[in-house]
Length: 238
Ligand SMILES: [Zn+2]
View 1 (cartoon, protein in one colour):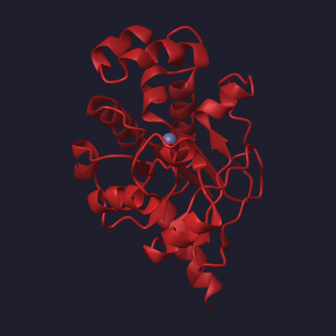
View 2 (cartoon, helix red, strand yellow):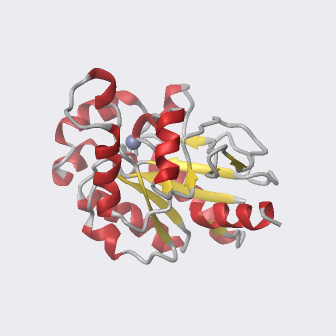
């Protein structure tokens, strides 16, 4: 089973649209974990592109904001009232936060990262939510010092494989943190960001395109996270 997710991390519209365009081109589904209102995302076909939420609880750690955790969560849920899933920015979680997610009627949580592990399976949390782990993330791939020639995941594995790409890294075709650090100064200027695109070696965009091609050519079914959660619940409740 293969699934693609994308944490949009406040990317500008053009950058998000670029990512949606790639998934559309190969007719592959994706779940977007959203940080803000995006017109292009709102317009995208929900049967293919699920919108889940991606709140940023980090200010709670360094007291840099004046919002409570619940305010932060409510703010993004007001933008996406139909969201059923959540992955916190930086994967921030705790028992209190997870209880809050369940209280807000979120169905699944995607905060459990198991890099390159095979045989992933969803499981049920004490609060009734389904937890869907994921095993690949673009910026973690270079953090390990890996090249983007090989994703390091066995796609024939019978378990779940869940990829996480950031639109900014797809747009930049990022291959290491140095490129991103330089480009980040122009995060909201897609035109200027083009000057920082990687055309030299394989990067995150090349990786995504090769995965999308593989899925399309082998007629592999792709899933939104909510489909995985629902399928798990249907079987679990029998
Ligand atoms: Zn994030």
